[in-house]
Amino acid sequence: MTYIGNGIYTITEASQITGIKKESIRRWISGYKYKLHNEISISTPIFDKDYSEASGKVALSFLDLIEIKFIQSFRDLGVKWSVIREAARIAEKLVDKPHPFASRKFFTDTKTILMRIADESGETDLIDLIKKQYTLEKVIEPFLHECIDFDIDDMASRWWPLGRDGKVLIDPKLNFGKPVLDSFNIPTETIYSAYLAEHSITTVAEWYEIDEYSIRKAIEYEKNKAA
Image 1 (cartoon, helix red, strand yellow):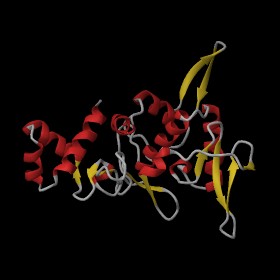
Image 2 (cartoon, rainbow, N blue to C red):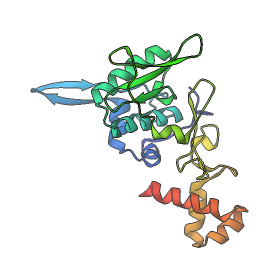
Image 3 (tube, helix red, strand yellow):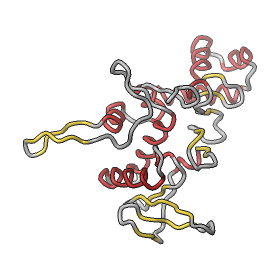
């Protein structure tokens, strides 16, 4: 897969953008070894990342980024690791494409993961991926759904990390997927660096001919990312 149009992130960048620890991301995408009852066991990756490693360096795509963010959201809602792993395996077979959790079809009831399936008439049902049966359980839609644009195939295409009114956009087709101000395609890092040099929002806004609200949101985003 080419980097162009798909975003590219180091582990450190992925951690800063998602708020997930670097060690966790590495374990999820590369697997790890652990000792159990005096024997060494292997935990396989939760999903296959898009890019092959080059010279030992790991790079992630935009969909990799979104998938690990959704996985973390399921964990935050109480879904067990064993359930997430099994659901990911089943989901990839059902949708017949990588990154199933980067789509809009998956929900949770905090115990299992459910997939929305449409029949020929367009009516939709929810299926429990673990029990492999339809369910009427009350579900929780991941908060991320509110901050992500999906394409016609229901796959994530853009992410608004501060919400849709937050001005900051992560789009794999812009700036290799690095965060930018939505209407200007200027990297938030560039805005923040200018602010650190001048210590004046007004001055930076005049330099780039951008409204001060957008400048403030770029600064807010970069400060949160660095925290």
